Length: 305
Ligand code: 13P
Ligand code: SF4
Image 1: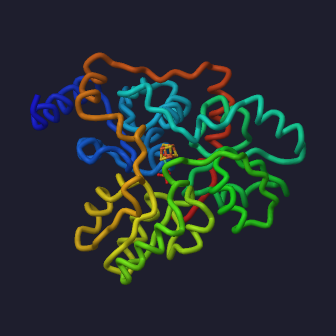
Image 2: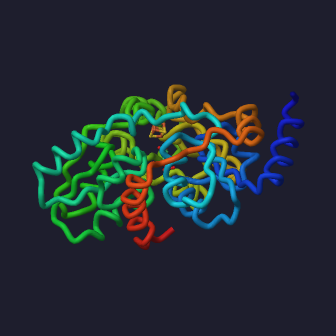
């Protein structure tokens, strides 16, 4: 089937199913273009709650679909590619987290949304890259266990007086970006500002003019006086950057800054998903209720966006 026909069929089925398509900025460009809403993890969670549709088709990875299913139990959440996991989310496990909690009984657990529903259920509150600092600083505790991203934990630690106890996880896509990559790109593009995602290593973030979530990077690039940017995150963001700031130039930090899981959803499996109503994301009730408390606490934290 040609792309135009695929898009037409997706739009027809979307209407028939009363469905809405949500996509993360790391999705394939053609998937972002057919989506009703494209955003960062915080924006996508907020949008899932806001939407009146019966069906949410999530173009992203498993934890994103799970978050929507936790927040919207009355809606059917579809993930076109059920095997699209997140390597960082897979680095955390419940027995290990329980052990850490036992070792630090006074600490509250903050869990990055890039985690399984079971890890969320073990946590006091969730956060995203857009609100991690505000979430941690909102807590009535001096010690915080931060799971699963050690890089985001280190970034938060530089913006709080609380003691941060990190889980030893990381995002392979962001962690492989090295200081040398940034220095090389800065040499090639001396006029460009370096904008980076807080999942990058601390020594990489030190070189950044701006550290922010994917949405925060777009907002910054639009408002900055700079005309060129080196983009320190997954390269899918460049499609959205060019759409919102077409007059500016964006250079991907490295040809390896690609998350294979985020590219698994394409127009073909998106259409099949809507045709066959598959794959439905489900979370067992006992896990869902506890995980929802952690997500609801996060959504109640006010941030400036
Ligand atoms: P944000 O879009 O929330 O910044 O998250 C990035 C990410 O890693 C999603 O997988
Ligand atoms: Fe997970 Fe990293 Fe891929 Fe985001 S970019 S989905 S954190 S592996």
